[in-house]
Image 1 (cartoon, rainbow, N blue to C red):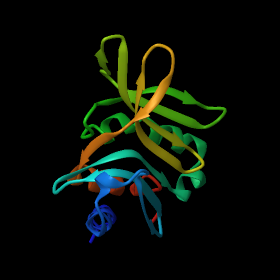
Image 2: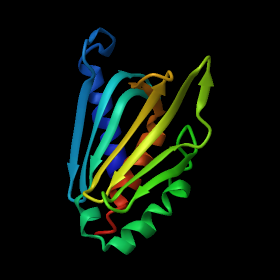
Image 3: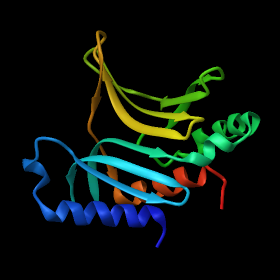
Length: 165
């Protein structure tokens, strides 16, 4: 069983233990593997998908990549994560802080508000996916839905970024 599949099964098991809809705070689900760890804040779990507030990973192997190799890997991320609900594009590569930021290529615009996915990839090994909404004054995190199939692939792809066996 691949890591992504194990992570999805863990979310399903945790969700079956209690009614997520009655929770005040999201369910925190985490899993560790030799290549890294993944944690998700789950609001609601259905048969084929779940609603998340945030999904994040720690992939220590990223910090061991030479800077040139890390920057090269960042250049492949738009294509690598093209299966997400929104197509992502690289909007910033901070070579000093060694952090890359990808956002929805075509954000959702409604009545003066903008919603978009944001993936942050730091050379320290921290990766985060969240959905943000900006109303022109402030930016807040909003829940988003991923199918379990997409979540499996995301977890497996994040773990593969380390390029370690």
